[in-house]
Image 1 (cartoon, rainbow, N blue to C red):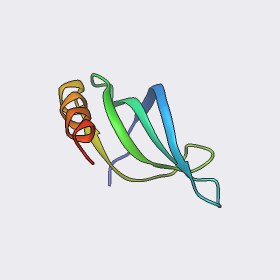
Image 2: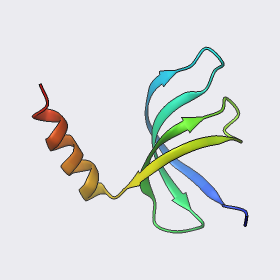
Image 3: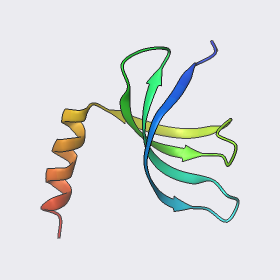
Length: 72
């Protein structure tokens, strides 16, 4: 598997933290030098390892916000 290059442009927020120190975070990340997107995934304390996650455009984040706002 090819190396994936990433740069965390902005940490929007930490949603939770596991007992082992991994954090579930919403960040803006540039993957392989591309335009930054919003990214939700688990990160090791040193940010060298990551779990599976989802990447969203700003428009998708706004749509998700609308869905969550209507959630009861």
